Length: 330
Image (tube, rainbow, N blue to C red):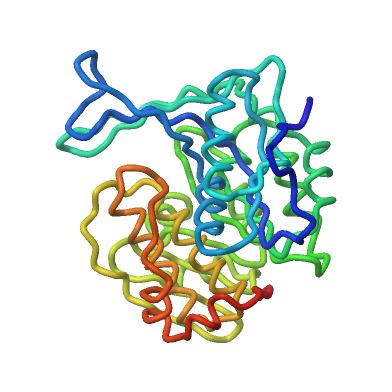
């Protein structure tokens, strides 16, 4: 393995967050098109954890994305696009023999179908040795998702090493359940619960929790995932509920025109983590999560431009001067 070289390299300034997971090339028809020979297509980087890193960078944080890509033009495209948003990609490694994963979107009247081609991808080769490299880099937040744990046996070991080693006081461990049925066998419920219980903050959709654990309410989810200091249960266009210590905070979702739902959960996590890094309260964390998710919902891509800082501050009820002050871990 060799590290991907970047123009600037890693800054000596400590990182706010490291987001670990596979990013593939997303093949998307231009608006109005389908997955057919008559359409034209756009290639974009698409991955849950890099989405979080990109939104964090857009929100003014020093965010890094860690993964492996193939020694191919698609791997170059992924790294270049993620880096172009201000994300540190110096932890990314190139696998000399495995390819960069690809997925294709097929929009239709009944919704968008997605086809994945990621078996034996470069990212699926991530392993405990790579986890050790990530662990050696200081950051205020380490963000992972359940997708990575499902990619391969070595990826599951990597997630175990990063997540199950136990708190060391150096950083906040963030985990998005991000259940993907096609990636898992019958162990999904058990494994994802085990991983969620080991994190400091957990994000989960009520719909995916119902699939995994046959629960019906956010309170049911909290009874199940009872160890993390913070559990955020997202209920689609209704609300988000944060369980923290002995308290519960509920924040209604913002009304938005939905163009494409994919990526909204990653955007929400980035918004919540951004507010947490700034030391904002639980209500502000949920509000910023909804605001960033709304931007993603209104875009055909997973990543989208955010509202101006003045608008963000008005929603959160803070002064712009505070927004630009140095961030601090929650």
